[in-house]
Length: 453
Image 1 (cartoon, one colour):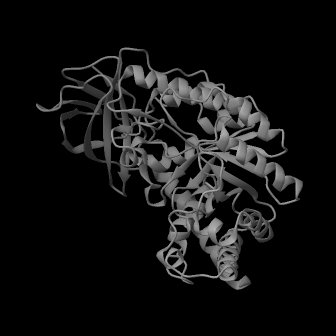
Image 2: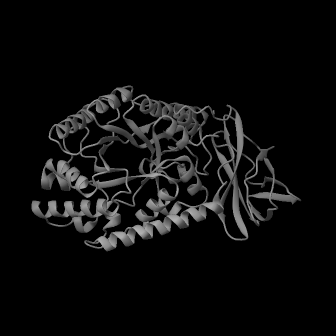
């Protein structure tokens, strides 16, 4: 067992080195108008951690650059859930989880493990099995010991138990509660602590952001666990919120949990809105993100704010809540939305969202190889609209456009000019248009400043 752990650690170290080396070739591909000071630096100045949920396969190009540069903590969106890591009993798949851990190590980030005990996304062999209480307890202990033990010393915090309560504060009827009673929670925490005594252990739930029946039940559970000496270090408030509905008691609720002697984390923050997005909704979303982060900043034991995916292209909301979306700080083309600047301002940043009535252009590189790269430019409007557009920039290292789509591009020396095609000149308020291109490069590929004319 020790030999296996040593090999897996070397493997992840090797992956971290590869990720770090890849970073040398993808640096500088961030949208041109992102805040001057990364969110992770602003958070560190406040003694906080700012995180995002990620998908391992996407940690390249602009997505990888933003995940690595803006955030100080990563949560695997699905890679550490039981159905992913043990789809067949006794057969484990750590590929994506290892990839995310390696990326985090290469970018000096924490990892938040998610999640060990949940009623959802469990493998069919587990949910369809017929187990005695003793068998079920043994399965759960083995799963926790195996997963936490594998990443011992590499995970800052675990969401050990996820969503144990109903809305009225009663225990949710699950495989675990029905088979083991409420004591499964204390047992899970105890087993996780034994597997990695240094990791912070959390109970995580949704609709517990304000003071209500559900958060009261969570409060009373944590209080009783503390009194019984069970290892419980923190409470996770998921914060899947609806536009304009940040609970007025959020800071009060954070503070009362902190007063129990545990840390608090906002673990899955997003703010969904009825589509389509417009400048008014985006302004309210900015205010909502800002108020949530500010509430955490105001309480010393609120240690982490994690957004559940940072780009609208990577959000669970659209498929889960039909008619709703645009729930994250970046749009689908990785351009920062007003919500991004709300987070920045709550963390003490001085950047502001582009002025009302503005359209902006953001240049990014989505793929790069030895002799060439694929880039894109996104034109976004908030409080304004365009009937046609033209974007220009100057290359500083000899890059040459070889092909373009969704725009007509010309290059004279280092100067590039791209105009809309016949079908995409209109950019409505709250919407965006993207065009792409292939280009050659040699030696370096710095991101140019773009001008929208």
